[in-house]
Length: 545
Figure 1 (tube, rainbow, N blue to C red):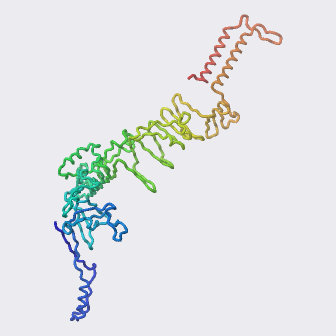
Figure 2: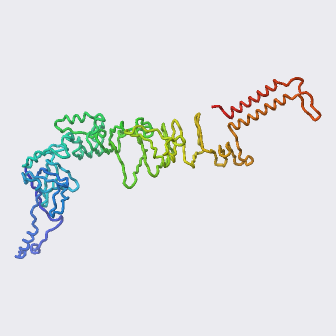
């Protein structure tokens, strides 16, 4: 292989004009001094052609560690400017030159865009202003992974030959199946060694991205990292096997948003076949109803990100999200929000569709956070009890609502339950409302009903009825005993009246009430009537369980 020199002649600045002496302008004969001046001007302005030298060179070393850095000439330390440079041996000008450390490090021609070669690859050297640069790797084998031709620049010692195709952190066998991305008409493709790529393409080729039709004006940017790393999980293992069985190592691959490691697809008019089976909620009923089951497969302008984990983080300010047609989230596990200050929701309507609803608040609430909600920790644990049935002393200052088989409503004092004008409380059989000391119901007009307290009963007050005052109502067993006493009095009264043989008067007995013995039948009928009333009162005041 040879080397080439391309020359160019520097020209004057654009638009400049040569200076014309008066003698030449007038057409007269030039004198000695004028001729000598013209010669000096010509010599001063003479600029010989400047040549750019291009030469093929073999990369002998890549400077990537501090130990490889050369020492500064003054001995003050390492020359960090050499980091990232390469020692490359020209196949003509430096053929057989040894040792390698006598080669001067060279750097990429472009300061902001470079490809780091590996030992044994070929680069193109360019010399400019007596300084060397390299501008490109040679694509001998059309492989995005390696294009190695060790030894092309001449002599090497035995140790160097033993190191051919061996690298400290780069195993060629692990990456031999990394292939070029399938090219489509008009694409710009940037591809790395390890299965990452960026495609500036379109959807104008039918079936290029599994769309059946050609779509004009459909630019896309497809970014992926990790060629087919998850192929087995999505039934694409056959594609990987085909690559391994390709002895030419030339078969190209297509991006796959499911089987590739991590992907970002930015499209304008293209269907993205994202598989959500493993990541979406199993039932997926709510999002289907609210958001009409929108899917990247529907196409249109969209950005789809897919990976094992996606993390958004801001170091100073907020994460803001806006959506013209709603926001939907789905997961087969837990949706969790941690906020050290507050969690705010502003909406005219709030709906929860759940089989269990639990709320635990208070300074000790975090001490009894339920576990679960992640594949490693299993299903969520039962919600901890609060109130008098709680067994965890850490819940001393926590209160909560748990709605399930057992409903618990607990709150630290003072507590308020505020309901609107259509509030409705309803319970099935067996509901119990237990309040410590006393309970009260009060309306916004000032009337109230109080149960318990010092009165040990029910106290009612109706605003505007000062004539009634606060009415104390006895209830339960006390009221039953009172009614029982009244019934007993009626029995005694009836018996006394019917047992009378005469009515005493001031003049003596009025005479016999009846001509015979006491009316036993009448007394028994009276008692039976009273007992009937007693039974009805008992049923009314103290229903048996």
